[in-house]
Amino acid sequence: MAAIPQAVRDAFGDQGSAPVFTTGDPSGLPNAIYATCIRIFDDETFVIADNYFNKTKENLLSGSKGTILFITSEKKAYQVKGMIEYVSEGEYFDFMKS
Image (cartoon, rainbow, N blue to C red; front, side):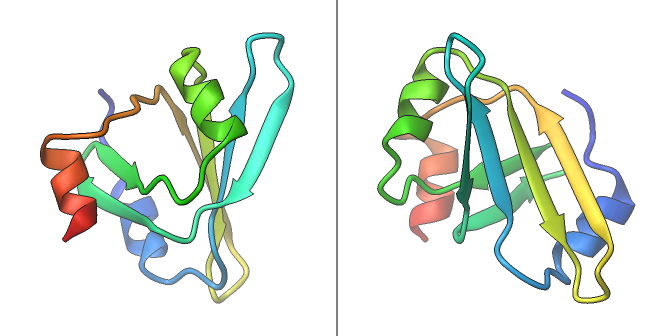
């Protein structure tokens, strides 16, 4: 995995609004949601809680890649793209539950 750049990590702590999380279905149709419960786990990993995912969960289980888009309070935009893994137990799950 690629490391999350320090500038993105710093900016993530200064969000002006909820990040947008985008996935795609197998035909490429995008689906975007506001991800109100998202955290940085480590230098390489964002973790997003499944807060009533429907289409998003279907997309993730079908192997979709994703994008996290957020804007800082100073109106500077950041976008992170990458592979996604849906988990329902383990360290990422426990991290978000806490």
